[in-house]
Length: 401
Image (cartoon, rainbow, N blue to C red):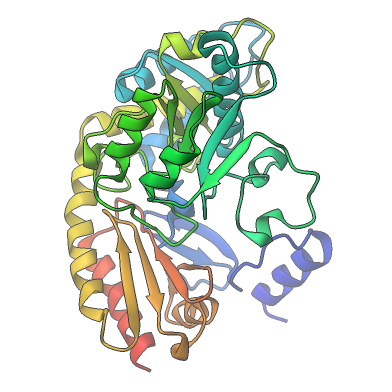
């Protein structure tokens, strides 16, 4: 067997089959390119679902991690450490908020947001104990924990994991009327993705996010924006909410916050909201650890320049122009997205999203399918225009074959 076949066979034999990766085994990576165990190079147009916004092996991030590795990597929150205050301060400033609650994974941050909203509802809004409701959108993807999949509408994510956590109301994404009708005196929060990533990079109708902001403010309900995939430069702004001039009550962040080096996530909000926690009521051994803070501080510094947001906006305009030329020509039905992020609905007659992804892999381009015939394109923000065009040429070749 080849080195690729041997590695895949071993993984299949000794790991749970909860993923179905493309048959490529990556050995090294730099920038927007990955190299497999056979020495073949591939253009990465997925970027770890936005975790690698700044590319593979970004020297600023690697150097920050190396420097911190030599000092201290973990104290637990039993003690203070010298990177924590700066991390919380800089992230709060980036978000124009006041307070940060750090965790590790995106799902942990969403769980933290849910707990925060409920606690705020009981302590501040005065909702009767055990009656708090959180409104979410259909086709959402917020993570894989038991509570989170309890309000998923994706059968693959939800089936066979019951009994499910109560306290959530699901309404259609983009439907302000349904949202208004679902609100009651016991509603404590609306939790939505400003752009739904796993659903196929779905951008809501114009005016939807401002409408959510207005409704939540009128009804004394928290607006929680899950910007784990859409935030930190991906869409051409620091946050996707900015495209419509909206500031939520709470940001949920992850993925790119750790630069693809370490898992870092956070809930960022006001002191009035995150101030509901007292010592011992919530925590994480690794949340806000020195290594995570060191890397995240470098990510924040890079974002403060605006360079990466501007790059995503400019290259994103180019990406969507080129993809738009494919739409309506028979091979591509619809293109959606914002910035360097696109969902491409392939005509079913050409194959499933998985099949198109496999054909692109043969052309040395890596993407990921979702929901039937949709592929997602989300290159690292550091990709060159020339490399992006090369990848688009490979896509055209696959679609015209």
